[in-house]
Image 1: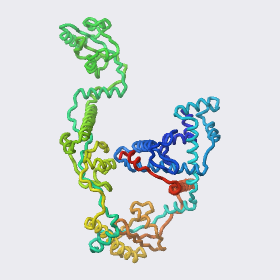
Image 2: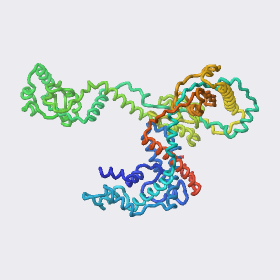
Image 3: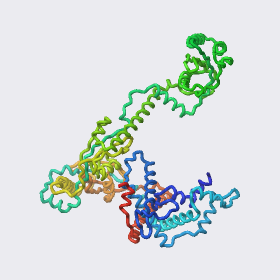
Image 4: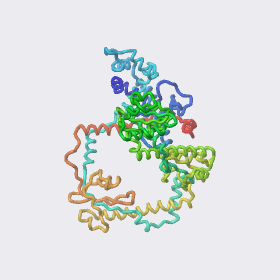
Length: 624
């Protein structure tokens, strides 16, 4: 195992791990070993192709990776997932062809030499073992040629990647300047001008609205919408009122099995048979309660041969008692050494038991766990009822029942959302999985109830109606939206105009309090302050102030306009970062730049190699 772990840390081990376990590595998605080009292609990339089966495998692998990181599967956007996987496959194929064109390859001798140095393939004497190498290949269902081909291909891609990413340049001087910027601080005074305060001053004419409509007609479109009826069910809405003793016993047995505790108690019995067995048993129990010896009474009164040894029947074994096992086990529950049961009627007669020795682990009694077991039993029944109800609703939906009929039959509240949007959905059902089903072409055509969609800890069924596709708005329909846009634009311009007017009169700290608006003093802040918006943080350090003076900066912002006043910018004399940390920062910056260069190079390759996507096969793979 240690050799395998060390091997996976080496260069061939890492490559193999990438090939087997990481279908979406830096250079995109790749198929597993062997296999030729699938005749059902999803994309033609130059002279190579991306096969349908390769694409589906990559999508499934990526989906599994994502679902391991999120709890709610409905948050997964399948369209984005498919788009990213396809791009990764195409990117990788582009780089593979370019690497081959540039002659980037690794010889068999080089691969052989490196593999011979790996400990995982060496015998006890430290020599390369063909047997161990063969076992390694056999366990992975590969041939030597397949392994070499995959390694050679991956190493070629690594060479090409390194030649692109590794050329990014970001000098240490620039790193130091970037770090120094983060150490800057200054005193800030702030006033924000809300555009809504200026809205009443805005006058709009029909001509303004017509001009905006004519210039932006192509972007003024209605949102795709449906009216949505839906059912929502979750286990927490299921009411469980009663829990039986049988339910508690089942949970108690499950609890004991989970502990893996074995009952090691030794027991003795007194067995009484015949017509008067019940009467005799009651009299013996009374004598036992008065303190007479159990072993002595067993010898004189028991009708079982075990009476000769004081009733000893060894370690408790439920299988001995057949159908009576549960009753006997319940009678023995919680008994300690010396305790005696009441007479129990079994198929053998009437039996009285005592515990003579206990070598097992102590198990809490059912009674002591009643509250906990009741809660578990209720939850178990709740999940069971929930699962049955989900199945029943799915069956009714598949049989073509309307959502109103399903709601009535299954006693589930029917809810509705009017104008349910495909884009910019802010409703309580904004999960991508729900939106996808609500706007599915066949669901809309048939006005059908979808199968259950898992959402968080529950399930949703939807039935869309009154579908309105996206379309260009008429002038009348677009007027309210245009009015809002123009009113905000013009009101913002008025706010900015006043902010600039005030900024022109602020030169010294004393000028701040002379203005007709009240400024908020933020004190000394740096570029990481959360008191300013992202845009305001950029403005706050954009201009230096004169000695003993301040600088006033007015700018349009998200809410209207902001007037920032700052004194002289100060920089810490000593950086908190060591030389090593600065070098690490530079490496991170260069790597990010390198990734940008790689994307630029891929855009170039798309011009060199023709890329054609088979939309029909893509749609089939996505179930559309």
